[in-house]
Amino acid sequence: MPIQFVTGNEGKVREATTYLEGIEPVEQVDYDYTEVQSNALKDIAAYGALEAYEELGADEPVLVDDAGLFVDALGGFPGPYSAYVEDTVGVERLWRLARGEDDRRARFRTVLAYCDENGTETFEGSVAGTLVAPRGEGGFGYDPIFEYNGQTMAEMSTEEKNAISHRGRALATFAEWYADER
Ligand code: ITT
Image (cartoon, rainbow, N blue to C red; front, side, top):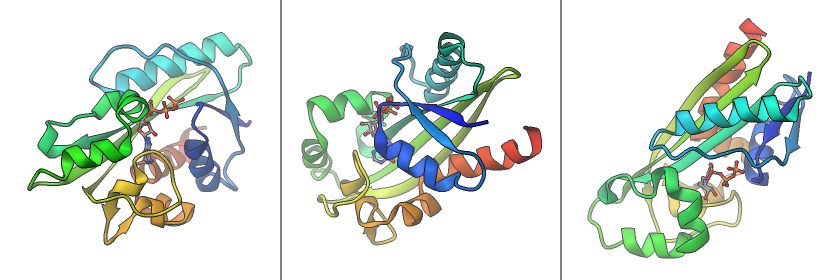
């Protein structure tokens, strides 16, 4: 059965569709689920997936992805508020904030929440990297300032990014579980 990926972010859909090709088709669904106020991505994703599953009422499984960029020297900022910070401050200005720090390590985290008639399951993925001046035209969001192994994520193809990214890792755990459980 196709998986309804509840997100307004086309970059996330591209990555999940590429990863799950041959496993299950992915359909993008626009539904504005409630983003509960929490510091835990897991709570936000799990709550959103259950709400979307119940509200959409199509009995088709849903997938929600809540992600964030956590900058070590900034105490994990912007973390769960990454979307808000991208919309308000922007990626370039976040880089300018970080470049004054000696320690430019950061981590992307994502939690995928999958919900069907049997309940909700969550899958986490994270990747550590370094913040750099923006480079690259691919990817989305904070990808141009996040460097992993000498390349920013915006310099990688979707397949290359999936092979090492937070989302790719979460999708790998999900796909393994899905093959056994569903
Ligand atoms: P939905 O909630 O509709 O899925 P969103 O873009 O608002 O889309 P999040 O709440 O998960 O998604 O926002 C996380 C923020 O982090 C947002 O600014 C994204 O652009 C950014 N982000 C998420 N995954 C990313 C990735 O793989 N690479 C770069 N930036 C990413």
